[in-house]
Length: 175
Image (cartoon, rainbow, N blue to C red; front, side, top):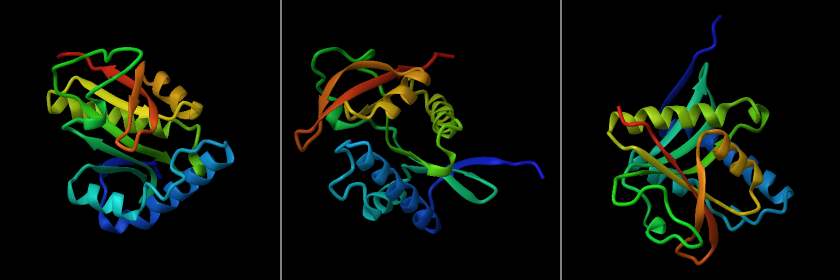
């Protein structure tokens, strides 16, 4: 039987699987002594809001959720100011991706990269030619995944709660 991956909007029925992936990711970050996602966020409510707003996606294979990603097609207000660098693009629409997480048993198998490819397709369909993201300075695995998938380190952004993050951006080809 051929394995078939599907990228689709998250549904309520996916929440338990998504939360298992998120909880494992939180444990991974904690074990790596990375303080990201250690304060209760993201929680089930974060995903329920994203489902309602149609901004949460999953990658599944044969009915099993392998990864989750949030895609905000209207950007992110935390990205209005960047320090110690510059965004690659300004004054143009961009998508922001957040809460990228992969099933722990499938880490290192290109699942995150596959989700990024699908987000690129989604953005191009909407004529959005930039994707931005941020991550904690200690989160080396996320930084490597972003760089491997064409994102460039742009500078420092600050979240609404004052936490510092490294801002990344990928410019998409105009067709």
